[in-house]
Image 1 (cartoon, rainbow, N blue to C red):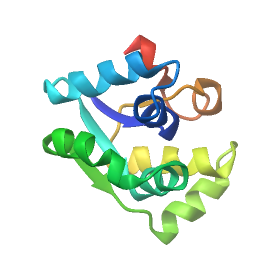
Image 2: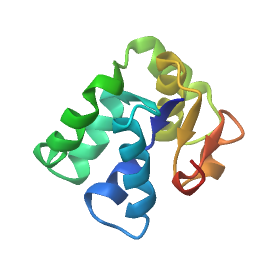
Image 3: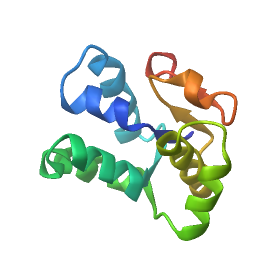
Length: 124
């Protein structure tokens, strides 16, 4: 399955927060070739605002064979502004679509589900 994983799930994993086990399971499944993950520059910017990106290196190295990188362009910004949710999540939705994701994995399902298929990490 092609997943776009929202920043909050990565932060659960990296910061060992309450839902870190569910996040770990998704990344483990990816390493085991069950999923492909879309990684956007928007995601990386949000991670960089919350932690040191160098702390993410090991995970991204271990899943690089199962990732597709997507970069934001001007059209993505325009499309995100048209969506009926706050801009940061709207841009994740546009980039998930651009990358061919089937679903967005997030702890904020309600912010996404009316626009794009979304589910929580516990359900994957």
